Image (cartoon, rainbow over all chains, first blue to last red; front, side, top):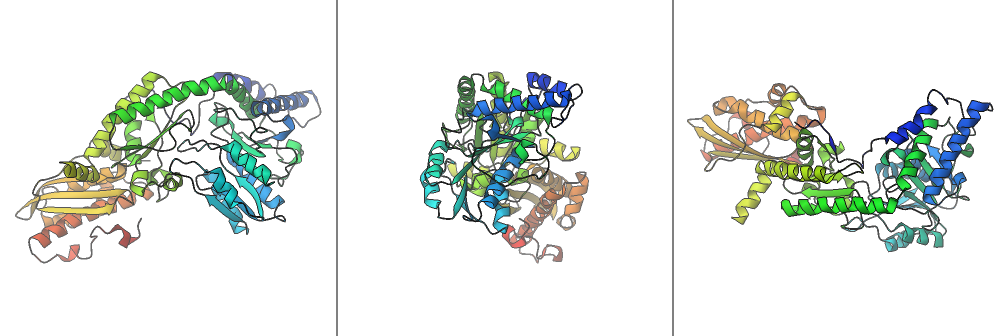
Length: 394
Length: 143
């Protein structure tokens, strides 16, 4: 068994870069001050947090006072959606989102439905694309919020966020996007794209877990999410996770260096992986859009076999990946994203997500493809569904 | 989440395959639910002399199929029909709660094949097999 982990699950989380860890370390023992304190070691840390805020803002074309640090991407989504819905509820109680959002958005919307809000879930096309026209058609006089994810975490489809932002602006509706998968991977300009609020998370871009951020455009006033002290301009109380925030900013800064070149390079590896799988394994389906997708995302359904069996077999060969099958989702249904793009249950059960990273090599990709060929063949030989296909062909 | 025994059984399952002109065939589950088990038996004088399976499903589904076939191979059909999911589970060193249904499916797959044997040979169905799963997953709300 291979000792090294071939990590193909960067959409789940990423390793912290050594430079990021190095930037964080002084903020545990040496610079332990509370940024709210008046004395030197407190003030220094306030400056560190502010410098981090500047860096995150610069990365997305925002102003520093529009960046609010949170505990994670999920918190940013909760705050953006619940905060806006509750703040603007006198104007209306209708929210537009999509059927393929992360649970951090979907379950937040479901919680608001219990409070009496109405939610329209826009269905994607077969590639996972949300049509901006469909968003516009769903707008009602009482719509107060549109929340559409920047890029999908499972199938990698990237939305036309600028077009949706323009529609939201024209109708004067607050527009939020969950950019947890996209931030640090794609060039984002919140002003150009008319984004009013945007959720981000550090651990998806080689930063630490436990820190996220919400961009809130000046003038947009969601309700306060955590009542407490004056931190984050009094809108999100709680002593700052200084080391985490510093690490987030460092990771974002590194991610922004040559972001477009890096995205192009990783896309080349992605396309090589897609091409090799398509060349070597029959009865498969690429999920998501072929080109309008995250640079690091590959998602296939392997017909006649089930995803968890695939993951266990890959794990045995030291390969870490994920699947949208029911057996891995912890529920009885396969992933809501795969069902929303129209996959029949049995094909959704056989899905596999491979998300590569900056440290992935072509050798890793060849090893994964080679392993997949063997595993898929072994599992198919055990499958009664495959047996039928072979018999019908004969 | 799985015991070592389950992983071992999943990685090196016994009795995978099919039997041509099998004396009994049983199939349970459906593709929508994400697991199907198909069992083939060669039966001589009421003794299961050979058994093979094909399974579409997760690691536990494959491991329980393998274990169930091992447990009944060489036994008489009357002994085999007493197989319980608990026995399959125990032999595998237990299963996570959300995977217990896989062992139930394995028990039912054996029962479905045995039912097919009694039907094919025109004999009365023993009481133990009456009302056992006929492969209609929807009917039993487990999924």
